[in-house]
Image (cartoon, rainbow, N blue to C red):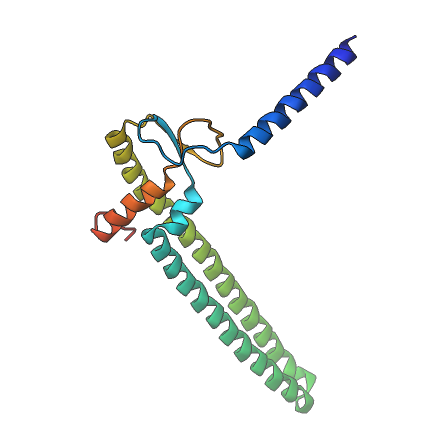
Amino acid sequence: MKRVARRAFGLGFALTLSCWSANAQTSSFPVYDPTLPIVSINRETLFQRSDLGNHLSEVLSKRQAALVAENDRLAATLEQEELELTELRKTLSPEKFAPMAEAFDAKVKKVRRVQDQKSVDLAKALESMRFRFFRQAESVIAQMMQDSGILFVLDEKAIWMSKGGDVTNTVIERMNAAYAAGEISIE
């Protein structure tokens, strides 16, 4: 009896979920209604489409491109040194060659450590800039909440809502205006 009840409940839940899912796909939710006290934000869209987020992305892209170019240049230099060392090996005794090979190996390991640390530092810089970006966004969002009577702002990825709406574009507009006016920055 319990097994039948569980199956019936499971089937009913599955049907309800599929109907709800179908309705969720076909119904259109409001993009933004300023009279509703609960709205959502898409943090990635906010970062990717705002002027400040674009500026940060450009800065980080330039830093990343510079690091890649530096890595390529160092790899080419080390490759050339390795070729020269390989040629020297033909003319030197093992006793004379061994210290040169060890020194080259130590140099390669050091370059690799330094470049790996630069990659880690760049990733930390990205995380730090994103954190500061969202701290700046918080002030814009807080003002918008006060202006519009919004009670809750939810992350769009974490909450499903049937009322309210996504205010990401409104926040982007306000952040762009504040950024252009010099009211917010990361520096």
